Length: 333
Image 1 (cartoon, rainbow, N blue to C red):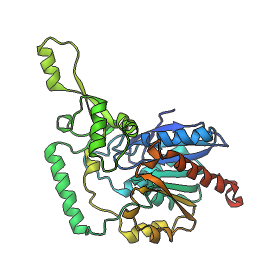
Image 2 (image 1 turned 90 degrees about the vertical axis):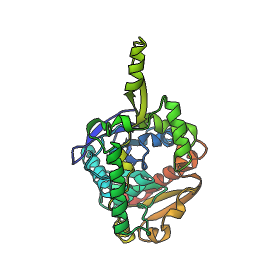
Image 3 (image 1 turned 120 degrees about the horizontal axis):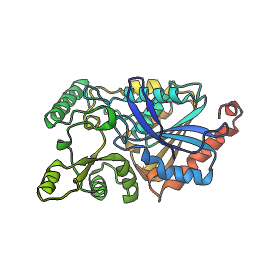
Image 4 (image 1 turned 135 degrees about the vertical axis):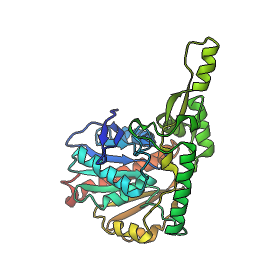
């Protein structure tokens, strides 16, 4: 598994992992993770897909800015959907693929859906898990959204967690939640996460989603006691600014303007215990020229759970195989 890096139009360094070997016969896929996750979200699904078709794909799984091992946007930036779309286009220009699919989960699925409308004719398909465009909170007016964004930015500033830049360090480490071990961070994520994830799936996300820091207080105590080794702890690697409320977001009409411009086939996968109810799915789906949906048993992270991943892998492989058989797409896949 490779670990390439990319530089966005705005000079942000993004890390990624790869699966498979690039070749004329391997279909290219750019995989985009969900909010506060990272590219490890795809490990179990890619294991299942490559076990069935070992040479059919070359996958680049991206860490978005402020997530995983990628740089943070910086203290003066906001994590708005448009910026994520721009990040995707930046990476694709670096990759110079002439044919590819987008694969996205949750926030990454929302970004993939909107980006797909901008990437014709090179994009051959878009696959989304638990998303069809971003969530639109109809109850929030622009005034309420601005008020909430300012309140959360002010709180971050007072706590010293106002973002970082190169290296993904971000924020004052003294003000970040600390963990004595990876296992402690895993248990906290399992207890406090919005969506339930198994311990194995959580561990994959956490191992890429924390960074080591020196515990200065404990190190000073150790030094006073004559201990030689410095004491290390873990903090989340994600940018605290990515958690704050966004000052702007797309309206439902804005999202639908993107969806109606998508030219490639779209596969939408949902779990029966996931976020299906959060979206105006039917109205959105009607706008996409070539759309199909698959509802499966599973939670929001159904692709990350060994108990539910196989049907997800099969749905994706069947969808891509069907596209290969279409004469109009034969030369593009």
